[in-house]
Image 1 (tube, rainbow, N blue to C red):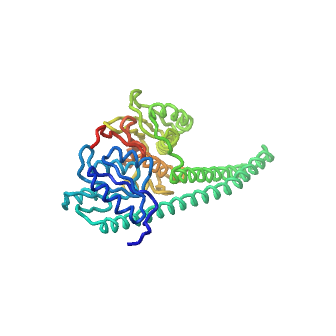
Image 2: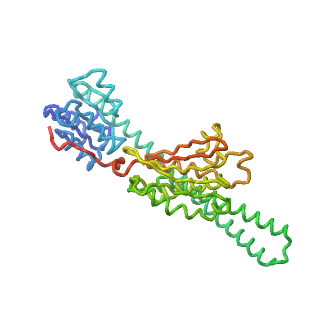
Image 3: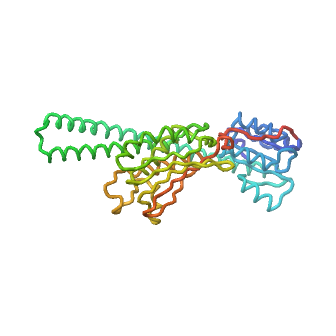
Length: 385
């Protein structure tokens, strides 16, 4: 066996059997691993939070907090931590259960030092590959974000200049400008505005995908967001003959999320509903279950055919038929909504019938019961083995 360890990251051993802890420590230290041992789950988990090891060895059968409970908490602290389960009760059932819970490998007692080292070396290699893949994804996302930001900036500057030239041209022409010329300039300005909208939505999408938009996890009031958002669409709704209705209960429990991201999500849904509901009604409502809060934006508009509903959350997809002709859009609003919801551990769904309107529902965790941040440990037993 090589004296060179497969990793420089620390290894944590959690086992209530002192002899087993010493044996694992000696076997791994002998080939250069950095090892720390703990006799119970709570103390081991607290150290894992601080130490951030690369691999955990945990006994499945322990008093107080079991190995399965340790695995569950570890996955919240570091989903990429490699876990090797050791137990004196080796059965196919317990092995499968441990693997489903997130364990990488399973070794029954008794085992030799060489057997342990082989499994740990494989686990460390898995950890190394996972970390390299994660780093590559981060670099790819960062590169994509830089590219989008650069391209968007390079597009926005000339578009702004073109718009200024059009405004100056129209001003200089004054009242003597032929009607046709005014129409052409107006259409150019409209197309420029559409391009600005595409660029803005593209940047928003890049921020969501890069994890830079929905960064907070705080209690958010849907009722307050609805009160703040709906007035912004009053003029557009009045022009289209659309009635806006806020039915979000004042006593609705708070959702767990990012306020600015959810404000953007709600604005996208309300804006879409107003656009596709000429001379209709748009209603914002909400309800709560045991551990979730759901906001619904309903309209009485043109609706969405079943064959299109599975595609509307795809980037740049827009329904193209007689009912949508003349309605401007980028095809990015709904993908942004879905990505924001998923980033916040929620989901967006749609229910719609052609000619009868649509309802988009956003379901998020309640603030009281929402999932804690990944490095948190919840409900740890106070006792130790």
